[in-house]
Length: 322
Ligand code: ADP
Ligand code: MG
Image (cartoon, rainbow, N blue to C red; front, side, top):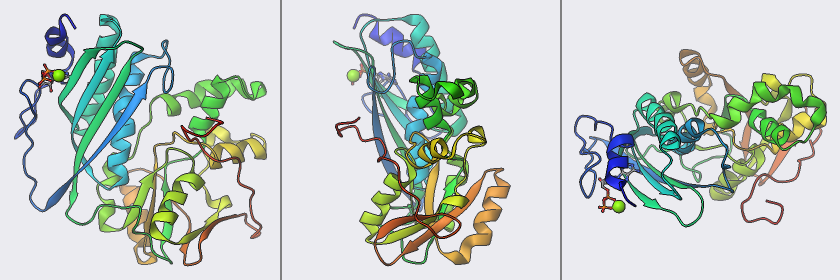
């Protein structure tokens, strides 16, 4: 692509943090971190699939990194560095300026330094690939295969807002369209709890981030850990933006709704007070919503102990309905 180096220099060359070699060489160099392990994750965002032509490029830059930082948080990791692959059908300087500022502002906030990437012309739409690197205390990452019968199940933040925003923006539930302005930021600018997540390895041993809906996401942990779970529907942290909506709309948003980018984690009951204190210290909501069981299967029960029907399953890119 003509001017590729100019674009990189102009929009994607932040100063590297102490101890790092950043953008400009064949590889980035990262410092060793005493007593810690590196964790890595990558996500692809494709125009027409994950975002549309008209989407706000500044919010898109934020989201491209935030969905990856959410994966680091899910492991209890501290964000350290990221790499950005960009395929662009044309050079649109206004778009690049806004996208890079959304991306780099969030990178600076979270300490997830942009240290490299690749930029090329695309034959189709815009394609964005972000790789993140983080560190955790050695051996203490929150893995999906580490839940144990008797563990408490916790959820950070609120559930349901992004799903409501997505459905309203698709024209569903027109009688509630006036809520869109209130819930749209939750969909467009996910804010994973990356700060408190770094303290979780002290208290929790399993976890993941919520991207496809709580029952579906939790299912991954139950399979990997060969156990089951009981969730208390009445204890779920319903987004305040859902207040007053019909019960079936709320239930779908809370149980089938993805794109939350909050965390679900498992911890021994002995750490209840420490976890509540962690939430207070970070000014974050952390809610105990259920328990891991030895018998498999996921049961969602209401306050009277009756099973709550699960809505159709969460988002799956390869299912027919996706
Ligand atoms: P190479 O030929 O080794 O792939 P490039 O010419 O593609 O290197 O890139 C030059 C430098 O710019 C490298 O350090 C690369 O990591 C960095 N880079 C390229 N594109 C981006 C981007 N979108 N964001 C951050 N760094 C980038
Ligand atoms: Mg390259």
